[in-house]
Length: 95
Image (cartoon, rainbow, N blue to C red):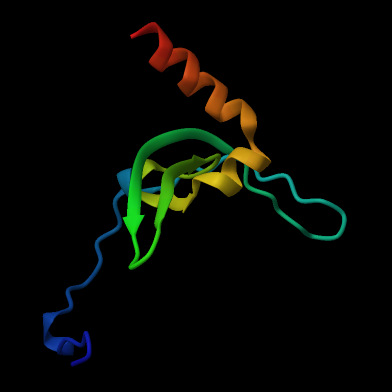
């Protein structure tokens, strides 16, 4: 089954100034590489496999909305961005 629809279901687009997308400039290096920087951890979960559990974190990156956040392995993110996890530790200790 494919996600298809009939052309009769399409409507003509009427321009609306509220549909304009505002974006921030993106810094690109000389070798045309763009590196996203995670700015916040939104959620946590554990993915259960047959013989092991994998802790995951939902990362919000710069220049993205919360709907575009991605699930990443917690271990890898702790190694790359330990500062993000220090904030969580301080927060949980205060509770």
